[in-house]
Length: 432
Image (cartoon, rainbow, N blue to C red; front, top):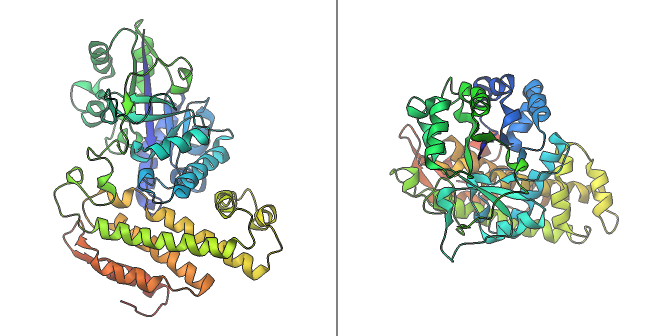
């Protein structure tokens, strides 16, 4: 019997509201109406869950009610985890993602879809430490070579190469479910478990009408006696031992590892991406200094500054007040002024996590998503200055003078000028 699992990953950047609204109308909502979520494994990013909670509670409720164990968590900001320069940020991304999942689905997640499936030894160690039972990788991330990253530390599923043909060839041979199933049988062994995974927005948003493909898939499988449709959690404990090992530093959509998200590569096209590395390094510098300022100020009053930062997600979710949080984590009385200062530094770190969201680094052009990452850095620096009078903004903007590239319209962009636009909106004097 061939076991087939459909896995859908949903994510859109939080700052593009019209884009999310369109995706909801053409994808998330129709899939809910067609009861697709009941038969597939799926993962929604926190950004989308927050948006649905505020804008379409009906669709969110359908998604949550469909979960019988097959929903997976995602990290908090869709940041490429192997590129985190501080281990604490890997810890926070996974922990915050888990807490958001628990908030909406009411249970601990068993699985986690990593941003772009990007992986490293540190990332795997932290998934295991935080009790994540399984994750997913693309076929280009596995090897039979002994140099592979791991084999038994965590269970994992490998996306079948046929997934790309289905996702990007809806008008071709695989547009009909029956053709897909015949092709699976032709390429698979008798007892294989075939995982078909892709971005969920493929169905309806990027390919209008393709959502019907998912509607008919369960019935087509049910009509055969040589296949069974299962979710990943259903076969987790009976999963056959993997012969492959996962490559350290690999990812789903970049054959060069994770180069695409910090310095650029041919996967992102042939336009110059020289803006990426100086911008990435400028944000890294800013993040490191904010971490240091936060630790230096909070350590006098807080038992464990990292634990406080991680638990701050409960304040973001509204499940705990900041006063309650300080009461739990303080080692001595905190004045109101000091509490405000520490909370502002926590908010600045939230912006810094957002600054590394993968959407800002995926494309070859210096477009709005990349510019948004500069805005995140400016917001973080402004908050730090208001909390401590420490001016990180001037140095950050000065470094951005070396961040240069073209947007999708061919307009020449300079990072420092992009930053200045936001600074002007915040009524700061020019520092460019």
